Image 1 (spheres, rainbow, N blue to C red):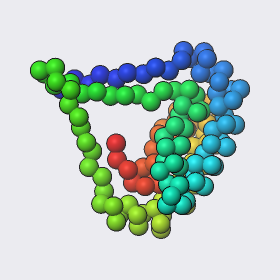
Image 2 (tube, one colour):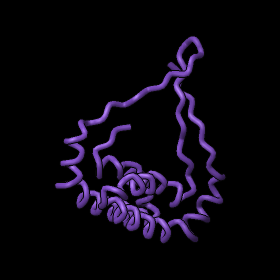
Image 3 (cartoon, one colour):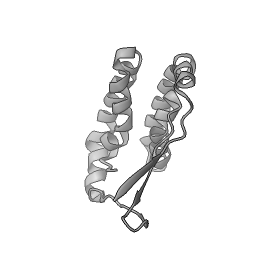
Image 4 (cartoon, rainbow, N blue to C red):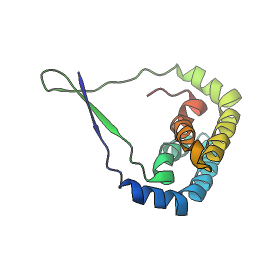
Length: 136
């Protein structure tokens, strides 16, 4: 099976200028807003969508779309099984909401220094997993 990735991010120079001029402070505001919105059941899907958009808000990095093609050229759709809903709800209620706040604060702090950027981006990509035990 062959994996084809498509990314439509702007060139790196534009992304660096964006991060320095706008992305760093905007991502802090965006992160706080997404986390607060995620605390309600109604706002949870919106908050998760906002957290998933965080890499693009921070550095204009587009989400990579992966398509899997088998040997015959047929597109294959892979679904990842999730943890049972009850476990994910219990995780969010007792652990996920406060651990994700600490996780996102550390990620944002790491992103505020150049040497911490890779760690910050890695942590931001995993924020929904920390909050809701989602699997990709």
